[in-house]
Image: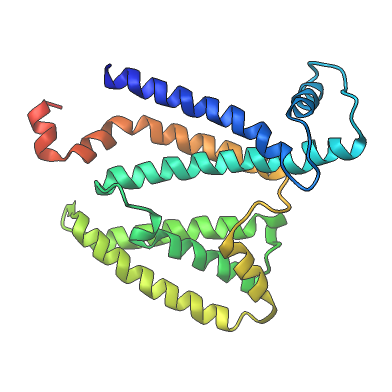
Length: 239
C-alpha cells in the first residue's frame, strides 16, 4: 500500500469519525435527544424535510445551543491541527507547539491587556481575540528578529529567543493581572478557554478565518515537507 493510499484511507476514516461523533455530541447532555431527531431537525432547518414531531425546547437545545458549539469545536480543532502541523514542520520536531517560541504568551498578554484596559466586551466581543492575534503576531516577529543572524535563522537560536521572550512576556502579563481587580475573573475565563455561551455568530466569524488559514497552509505543504526533511535529505532526493 502506497503512502498516498494510506493517507487517503486515514483521512476518510477521520472524516467518518467526525460525522459519527458530531450527532452523538449533540445528543448527550442534561436533556438527552435522539440522534435521529437531531438529523431530522438539521434536515428541516436546511429545508430538506418537514419539521419533525419534537418540542420547541428540544429544537432550541439542538439547533441554538448544542449544535453551534459542536460545529465550533470542529472548526477550532481544524485550526489547532493546521497550526500544530506548521510548527512541527518548521521546527522539525513532532512535539513543537506555539508555546515553544512564545506565541502563546504573546497572545495571552494581548488579550489580558485589552480586558484590563477596555473590557472583555470591547468591539462587540472581537477586541480580545483581535488583541490576542496581534500579540501573537508581534511576539513571533520579535523572536524572529532576535534570532536572525545575518541572512539566516537557526532553529536553536530561534528556540532560545522564544524561551527568553516568553519569560519576559509572561512576567509582564502577571504584572498586568496584579492590577486587574474585578477583571481577574474575565481574564481567567479567557485563559482557560471553553465554548460556553457560544452560538452561530461565533461560527460565522471563526469559520471563514480558519478556512483561509488552512488553505494558505495547504499551499505551503511542499515547502514545509522540504523543511521537515532537512537540506541534506532534500538534496539526496533531488527536490
